[in-house]
Image 1: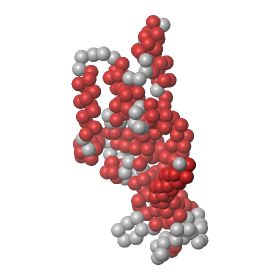
Image 2 (image 1 turned 135 degrees about the vertical axis):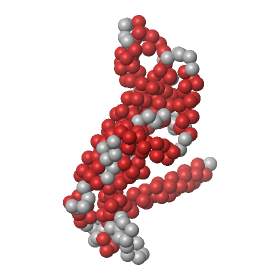
Image 3 (image 1 turned 180 degrees about the horizontal axis):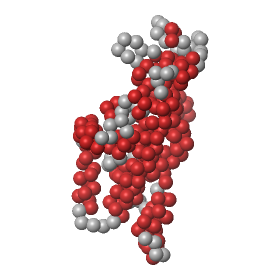
Image 4 (image 1 turned 90 degrees about the vertical axis):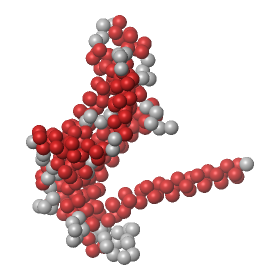
Length: 276
């Protein structure tokens, strides 16, 4: 019996190790290619382990006169943090009444909002672009921040979490004289930190990794980092070393955010029912 259990665990760990290797292989290949000389990035058979590791690609990417990496990084950081802040703010004040207040049509309004999640996001591309043209917001931070903050996923996620908070806590705060905003600030938000942090990580990653929308509405120095690094690839030549170095730089902030928010991230996924 013990041997069978031990064999089962070995098979399970072996399967997990294979899956982990499969998921990490693209990350390893990106880092490996970024530290190879350009001539070694296209040799056959491919070199999994660099024979002449160098940081030349990173230095050239950061100092290239044709690629404003630092400006693109600032654009991505600014728009991602601003988008995350306003997205969380709107989601909190939309989710709270749908979870805690009783009014006619509340459930119908919630299901109407929820049904909008079924519409593919690409369907909003042209209407949003026309709106940005009308507002004269092309090539501005407004075009990168405002169109996406009305997403319904945040409202749905926070509503599900707010429903789990006991009403007795809210009643006690009301007896003590707290206003509705006071209840949100001193009761709802402190108890919802894991869900809010989780949603913040999702929204930050979504904004940072967004490629299609910035490709349409910003150009030149206003590009975001994921779009800007693609300039190392063209129709006739692709500088794989610089492209991978730029991609590694673009991936770093998301990894940092995830590492610092990991504890709240896992807890939030569990409490909001997004993890089985």
